[in-house]
Length: 322
Image 1 (tube, rainbow, N blue to C red):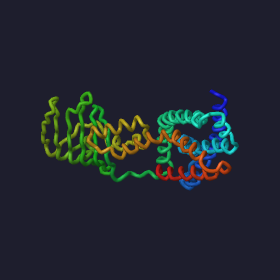
Image 2: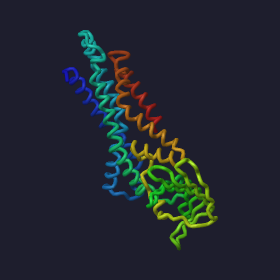
Image 3: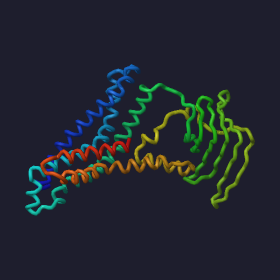
Image 4: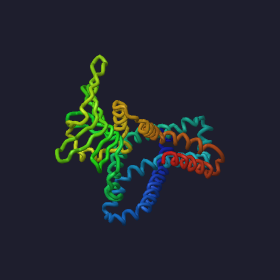
């Protein structure tokens, strides 16, 4: 690494660290003020509050990275420009690309870092954080209806409840899929399924069985109007909370979307979320490009317009992601 690269990176990292810590502090204070009533009402101990914010910390860092990168780029290059250091470098025949090359490579590193950080730290911590919030900060309520509940039986069959009513232990528009090496073999559809607690079994009403042959033929069989469904799942298994799609990393979400497609469900909302997660990874690299543009435009003597543009751009950005 050349002396020029070390000089620019050291200036960048000093400002970046200061801005990052400041932003995390601001976000933490705002969040604490917003939730302090809930902490007091639910009687959370100081230890639980610290644990809550420990799980929140990776998310705060992730939110602060784009703004920190943009402002650090603007201040670093803006200061060099104001002190005529960039003009001196250009007079020596050094191109703007060569001057900013170390920052561009840092943007590539940030992209890789954000990918790993989001998928292996932010998402698992978010899941823990939301579990704590649901357990301690929000009153426990049994939902009236659960939609598109997907569970796997012990025999490997996939059970999909279009609607599940926890208070009545009743499912509506239920489909059960039997696979063999990822190939759909049989499917059972029931208009309604009720849990008979005294017998410990599921009773269906109005069912149809489809059998799929290797040649692509489908055999239909209308089942008796009322009967039992051989499931090991209980209402407790169905109501048990699993990791939610918005708390999944990219790999888990991709599998979730594919499973929805296979089961004939509409994954459009989660495809949008998947694309957002991919796009967010590149924010560090993009903000460095923006910072270079903002810092080297306009007056050399005044950094305020560049900083103003940066804050405005990030304000619009955060409005969209929220």
